[in-house]
Image 1 (cartoon, rainbow over the protein chains, first blue to last red):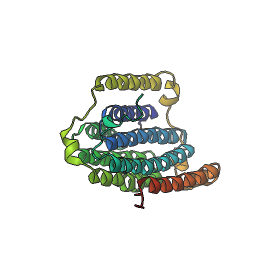
Image 2: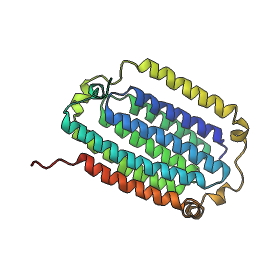
Image 3: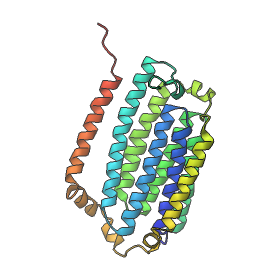
Image 4: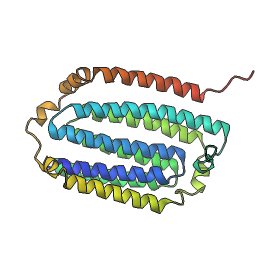
Length: 101
Length: 169
């Protein structure tokens, strides 16, 4: 394959940007979490791209840790969402202003 | 052939991500992210990370994303579909994101240009095997690996505690 690692990093930057846009703008809390997953995937892509480029397996190990942290984040985040909807049915991100000063 | 496959997967990734971020129906969004994860797994295969491609499909697409889909379906889909998709501040977010991506683009072609433009070392094929990966995971990364299991245990307990209903007394 003649694709250079620069193109992989560029693709990773594009995916990260799309995920960041989704996180900053979507008003549905679950889609904000899903946008974070898109960003984590972009980071994994660049880690594995560099692991491939340098022939070093450590980048792949770090990507595996990123996946483990993403799983933990999904479990805790969705537990929070369920607790939130139980206490305030129909609450959107814009309605959660209890900590607003 | 591998190049054509890579460019197809790259374009499909970006298109799937944009569709996922902009769809009105949250369930459609999550299904587009599922397509995105499958294409990213294909890129992992091209980059010689077979194990991580399998983990991506099994854990990410198969477990995490389906978990998101279930929780989204438990909540109010028609109400979400009727409301506004984006906050009022979305042009600011767009400018921020475009500048960030531009910065990353410049960095990958300028500062690190010599590193990233260099051809990949010849030893890539041998070092991408599962055995090398396992040696790294259980060698220098053995302690972080155990800590990841502890983190997952804490996350499981935390999720149960958070989502549990209080018994009525």
